[in-house]
Image (cartoon, rainbow, N blue to C red; front, side):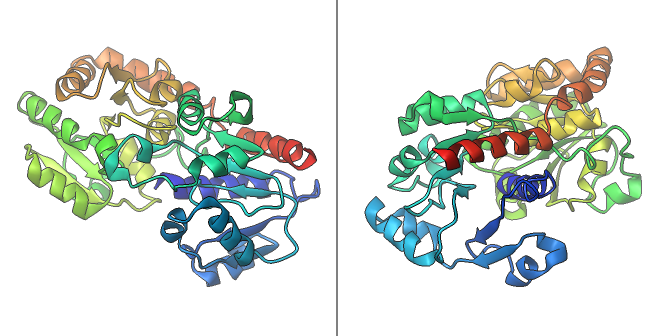
Length: 357
């Protein structure tokens, strides 16, 4: 999902950016989520050192800040590195060195079904030398909810995989689509199922539209069981549950879609719309969170996340071929504004400033 892509793409961009030649040495530590054999394979990791730490983030999140810091100091080997960069607020940095955090957004502070923030979230963020976040919306959330000084929160938009999502990608053929249960023209949703993803409202909107577009189906790609439960709760005609799409197949399936439907009402960035625009696929989304910053004027944005608003936005695209063609034409240029190389370069600048402070 989104966090995993960020971790993979940021590390790859840093390692290919010349950072090592500039004197940076990376010791990447994972909290048991990556098989050790993958980390230790040089052709896979490209890292000078890689270790697994075994502490459980959920348990750590319940501890008082001084105790959590003590646990972290014990689990990290000496000598301490010059700087820590934690890619999630769930993995705080030990004491003793400057810390940089990447925080994409704070859904647990807004939605009960997204879990809870660590009890020490404010202390950890306030102790950081710098915070990286991908949008002005996310920055406003961090400043407001974590009481952070604005000057310490740096907005650096994420990028996308330009070699994977581009206009030259061929659309999936009928045989490839049939393997995921897709037959004929379709709209695609790709993402999770929590409340902020707003899948229920999308299904209700589709139920309103489906009788008028009998040749179309709505395809849901993502975690199978929870999405199946949502579909059962809000039945609508011609809904296809594709499950997780293979990463290699996703661009081709997305390229074959009539449009990407992205009903989320809270995102710190919004990678699926960016990938769709890079492919020249029209996007229908909601004017909420960071999505307007990513999409600009190259998507149909519903005013809010209600079923009626989403249905009207979807209908406006489906009934206006000229609008769809315009979005397809303008989307790639909008996507081209976002680059992992730029992101990594700005992160390295922050490293330098944090390490010198």
